[in-house]
Picture 1 (cartoon, helix red, strand yellow):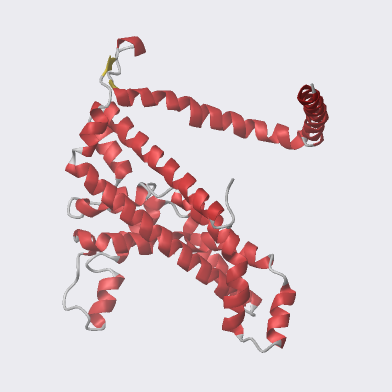
Picture 2 (picture 1 turned 90 degrees about the horizontal axis):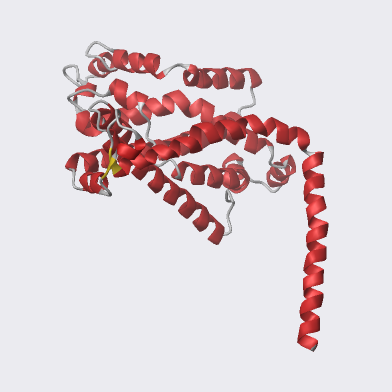
Amino acid sequence: MEKHTVTVISSETATSDHQIKLPLFWKRIFQQRVLVFMSIPFVLWAFVFKYVPLWGWTMAFQNYKPARSFSEQEWVGWKYFKFLFQDETFYRVLRNTIVMSSIKLVLGFVTAISLAILLNELKNILFKRIVQTVSYLPHFISWVVASSIVLTVLSPDGIVNLLLMNLHIIDQPVLWLAKGEYFWGILGLTEVWKDVGWNTIIYLAAITTIDPSQYEAAEIDGANRFQRIRHITLPGLKPVFIILLIMSMGNILESGFEPQYLLGNGMNVDYSENLDIFVLKYGMAMGNYSLGTAAGMFKTVVSFIFLFSANFIAKKMGESRLF
């Protein structure tokens, strides 16, 4: 009888708590109604362009023919996934994708954080603004124009070859983009040149949130500039760095498309071709939509696993996380 009484009281308490929380939830929604209405267009955009197209994943399990309706398609199960993992070309483009993404990830973080710290240490405001503007500008250049600049600079009579020859480092011009082993380095440096200024914005914003009194106290205690950077600035950037790293891990198979497509050629294809170009070349261009969908689905699932794994590890280590 006592157990039953406790159960009844617990049920009534739970019901009461639910009745209290529900009005509070709707009250908060009403208070933030402007933000809710502002988010509706984005939610609709995400649903239409991100979730509705997931229906197309069914093509990966079909011998898809565009002229047939959905009910007339031939279902082939895991055929195209098995084909992918038995294809040497797929492993080659997967290797290229992971390596190019890793280079972009490492160089992107190192250069952006370094530039943000250097800009923060500048005392001349005018010079600081000039450096910021010059470093931001390449981000607004399309990859078509950026690739043309890179091709011109690396051409046989380009500035790189002329400079190296004048310094007697090389005896004759080098066809930089004709040698596949140079492609990853060229692409990494090109990505840094184009995006390093833009990537520093968030780190500069994070530095401004650090309490200035910490720098003042460290300076009074005799800490030099490098010690202040090491013990105050870098720890202050750590939460932002962890969040951006988790998000970047979710894009580990997104090494890009335009720079690889524009800078790639028949002589460096073994190093420049990535998953996106593989999908275009062997899926869309050849009309094998099922194979292209299977490759794209593989990329999405792996990115999903990397994202949640990185977030889980950050949570276990007590670091900042996405959710």
